[in-house]
Image 1 (cartoon, rainbow, N blue to C red):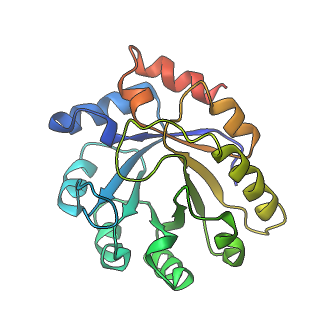
Image 2 (spheres, rainbow, N blue to C red):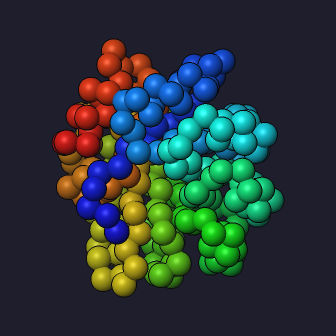
Length: 218
């Protein structure tokens, strides 16, 4: 697991009519990766972009691209995503009774694989996933929409997660998604978070580079 703080720019928070320009802004600001929220309108009430849009966007960036699957059947997406420029995939553990099998399928395609857990999902759902996950994405808002407020009890959840993974041979990159900003990043990092997923904080900043720098040097 890296000790470096990684900033993932959640493109859903940008100008959706000018995504290629927004990706360029993210690169120039020094973000580490592009975060893509793939929603199907079923697992969450919102509907966003799918593989055709992701494939088109991949031509505009050299940054790693992370697909966060908020879909009822993540199995349907893996092989396609591996072919269109995605490097990392997380799916919601709530969507399948066989997460280990899906994680192994993701790795077999050459991608880094991880799970996301919604705010109401208990952290003990990950205890049997030692050595299986590259990434643990902890949702600090309800999945589905950008611009929500950070859920404060995420801190306690992260404390418990830190205890669960501390003796794992393969420790995952712990990421937090939802309401992340320079106001809470320091506390998140102290709790073991190394991946900060940001939407509104970055895209509404007067100076995106300064916003990224604040997070990376927190």
